[in-house]
Amino acid sequence: MASETAQMESEPRGKSTRNLMVMIAVCVGSLLGAIDNTVVNIALPTIRRDFGTDVATAEWVVVIFMLMISGFLLTFGRIGDMRGQKSVYVWGFALFIVSSALCGLAPSIGMLILFRAVQGLGASMIYVSTPPILTATFPPSQRGKVLGLQVLAVYVGYMIGPMLGGWVTDALSWRAIFYINVPIGVAALVLSVKYIPRVVPVNQSEPFDFPGAVLFLATFSVLLIAMNRGHAYGWTSPKIVGMLAAAVLMLAIFVLIESRLKSPLLDLSLFRSPTFSLSATSSICNYFAMFSTVFLMPFYLIQGRGFSSGSAGLLFTVQPLLTMVFSPVAGAISDRIGTRWPAAIGMAVLATAMFLLSGLGPTSSLVYIEIAIGMAGIGIGIFVAPNNSSMMGAAPRNRQGIAGGVLATARSVGMVLGVGISGAIFTTLTRSHTQAAFFSGFQISFLVASALSCVGCITSAVHK
Image (spheres, rainbow, N blue to C red):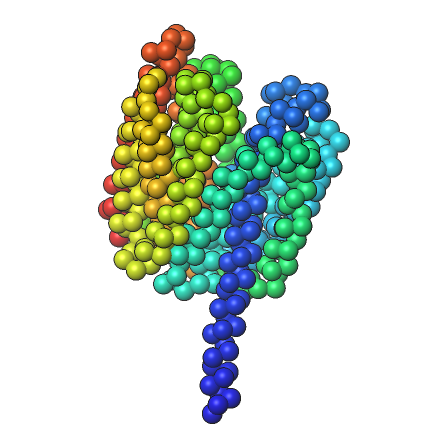
């Protein structure tokens, strides 16, 4: 009898230890992916100088990483549903580690861009498989909390990435920012192989939609390039208008093809669930506002108010810091009271923050600036984990991978549109190069972000 009791006690303890190791492994993966999404930006001038290349070419070190992540999310989400999320995660992590070392060893700018593409491929595999792994490992009563902790890891990466990139580049070299991924990544990979449970997929016999994968990659590539080069070519130039029109046309063709396949890359039936589709819409609105802020605030602080880059970075640190604090708390609360109201309240706080930021002027106090930026961080922190939990909970078990892909794609779409549209508004309104036009560009851009955040608040509040 005593031995049976001991066995019963050891099983929960063993499961708890395994779950903790899974949490550590996937959080390290999320942390490294987020760091490498931002760490290179600060080192880009040094990289350009060392290779003796122009700015347009050097920018591809950043752009190709974003492109590979976004363009392959649905592909790897679907592969995860067919072959298992653990396989996608482990192989993606291994690819990320190897390519990080190769980036550090790159002999030319062309090879660095190539290795960054491979690194982005690995990061895409990590991003898309993390939510399904956590959803499968932990019970529904803990889903919001663990997804909140994963969001915490992401925002820690976003926060320390620029600081780490600057410090490591100055103290060692830009190559060292890639080398540091290797020992940390190997340790987390060992934990992943040992502790992440392998869930046998229920749809292994379904065929893979190769045409859909190629068409989605092409669509997102054209959209990302158009948004990235709009400032250089002009938003009304034939090149940009043509690329945006092509992206819309390809997206329509993609949706049409997917709706007619028995085993599509993107299972459109997921969007028949109001919870899933409205949560995806809310996510796009959230990341639109977030990346509008990330894009515009450096211009305001440095160009508009004369702060140094270091001071501006320090002022902006409050946003990811508060997001880190509120995300796990909001996730845990959503496990108790449901996801609807935490997500809606988070978007309402974010909408208020965007409205406050629209009031920034040439004499706005530091207290006002910090309150507005801080409220944005709080709103994002309250929203993300409950909304992610809502989306993953609305998807059936055999579509968790593609649900994770849609979740990550919504983030990428919001990011691209936030930077692109706020950039288009800002550059259009500041053509006269007057101080009034400069601050008017900020005000209109943040009012648009506030309006879309209000839409996200509504879509969060109405879903079940």
